[in-house]
Image (cartoon, rainbow, N blue to C red; front, side, top):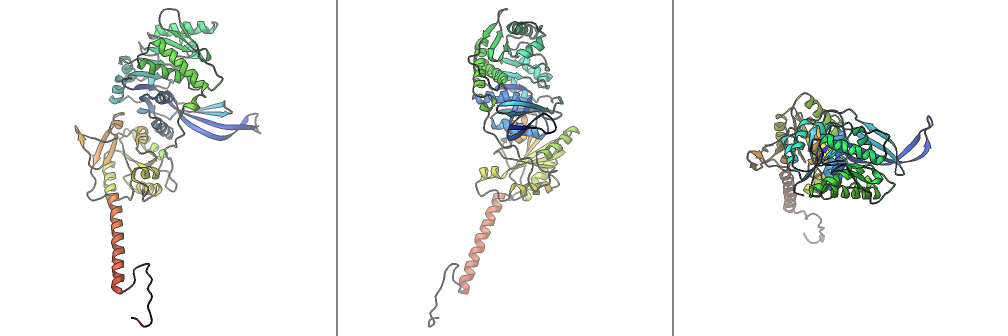
Length: 500
């Protein structure tokens, strides 16, 4: 494909809790689940984006992220999967769906964060990435992203094929989409088809109704183990049967279908070819074990708490509180990042200059593992707990959050600072600093700023100077011992009684 697949929609945090049921609750006839493991994963549009990225496709996700720990976790998981995130702000909390499972079966689903907030308008960078897409998938989960006016205008104006995966609580598809992909229950609710019809008649009439109402080029109704029904040319639908059936976990099968169809259309396939390919991919997905088989190995969350450091200043929750308060007051969020090993005057000058640019300063701090990977096994000199404690004690720092990755990409995607500050000398391109994070920060309309270091201040230079002083001290001690007539360290002398 010439360009990325752009996924637009609502992202949720899904948590699968596995366990064993061996007894009933003593005070009510309810099973007791003894938890053995849990796995976090992006849900909604985030899951569709991960499916596409797993197919070796360049994927960009346009979604809304809240200022809370759940959104930070989502950013980390998406970055680890290779999904580029263009985040809109989201009032309220991150929606979470917790599935309690035993022996591969879902016993109960617990939803929280149900208040739907209004996503913030997209930055120009978001509109540009939609305009340059090879294909677009709108994965609507009824939480506001698909209804954002500027995004809808961009979707209506793009030349790329658009696949619209609708939700009954969401808005209508923009006119002219190449393919809409409701499932059977969604098409019944959206098209208001009489309930006394057979499955095929219901799907066919519903697809035709939605195609006319939305002015869509085609509508494919997914029917589980029966495959899909495609309405795209005339009144006679095309039945695309499932290539195989399996009694397994179908969670995410609709997302896999829609993502596969969008990728195929982006490559230039006909709609009928894209639907056939999508049915085959969705069937293989269920047969292969469902969502568990498609996810990458579990990735640790962004550290939320640093032992021994006051929780009100350090961690994801602390950063979320500060950022939420500043944004609610219409203020400017400033962030900076680095290792901050052996905190020195140059660091302090950079932090003070950064804080003056806005209404709060959040420091993204490389964890011990991240510093060692970047600078070698002898670093850091100070642990992340001590480094966090020192930074949090500075009056110019409002919050510190630790990240494990080599770059602060996931942390920045979640924080979405208005200003990202780096210290040092960087080349400029047309006036704006050329920084690795500059393109990322522009996704939400932020800016990058460079403030100079104080001359002669460097952690590496401090460590080197300490080594030189240690070596010089050892040399002076050895010379003094020789002048006194003492033997060199580690050498034993033997004197005869008759010899002086």
